[in-house]
Amino acid sequence: MKTLVIMNQAPYGDWSGREALDMAFSLAAFDQPVALLFTGDGVNWLRREQEAAAISQKAVDRNLAAATIFGVTALYADQQSCHRFGLDQHTMIAGITLADTNAGLLGEYDHVISLS
Amino acid sequence: MSNKISHSTLSFTLVITGAPYSSQAPQTALFFARAAVAAGHRIDRVFLYGDGVHLASALASPPSDEPNWSRQWCEFLNQNAVPGVACIASALRRGIVDEREQKRYELGANNIAAPFSIAGLGEWVEGVARSDRVIYFHGGS
Image (cartoon, rainbow over all chains, first blue to last red; front, top):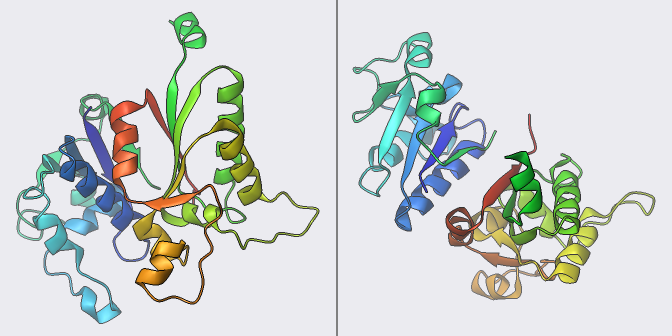
């Protein structure tokens, strides 16, 4: 049972992304295969050097950098969305696989979740 | 193919992430659950996540001429012996507390509506691994 969790909202303004991430980490903790796909506004999760303490929140980029250590199999970023938000390998955290969000990618998973 | 699906019995895990009275998610999920059971399918578990945990509050008191979704859900769970679980992390952040968490955090009250219980995301993971279908009811935006 392979699961893909889609992150399509910008970080911080909305709690759903954080809770979707908890779902992904939880699957990984129980040895269920899971990958993350960042698309639309959601690619901003991947931006380097976020200063979330200024708004009394925890930075999400460090959390994500540890995702593969916790057993998340892959972190995909939608190529077009990255381009739209000016994200490239210099401004994104390491370990991200660029992808096209299409039926081919989604079809590789038994279970596709988006919380918003 | 459509024949096969309509005649076979499926097991479902329902995940509700929208709160009552700010979204239709709990109502839509309840109507889905009633229809599924009436058609001979099985609901393995109802999992409340995010804002959906507000459905497990015993203190919601809508006006008497409006549906009480928490009460209707509790009746459905009792009648069909379906476990209803609120995610502990979501619940504690939003002030949905059972007696055990009340003691642990030394809070002034608890408010979980029986038969809902509080547990971890592992309950949802089990649904993903075991149920034939996992259906999500979101609040939308």
